[in-house]
Length: 79
Image (cartoon, rainbow, N blue to C red; front, side):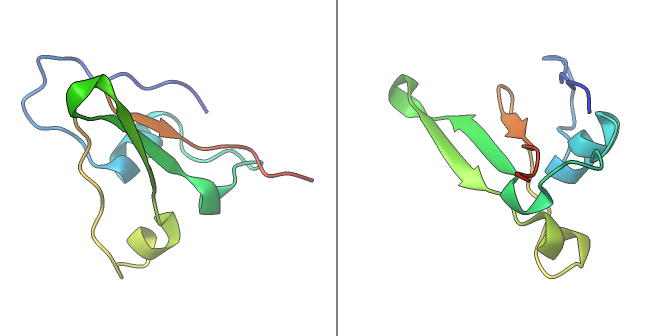
């Protein structure tokens, strides 16, 4: 719902689900099946990963730890 920025000096980095909750949770229009994490990699590039929010919520897979500079994108559903 709103941007959530992690302070650089934080000692314990949040998990993906915690960041989404801190940003206000999912809006009614959120496409929870299309959550993506974009992370910087060596050589200045970026890599994007699908985040299986439904599997994390059900406890079938572990929550993803965030790193400084990560971007979590929750798009709106297409109608």
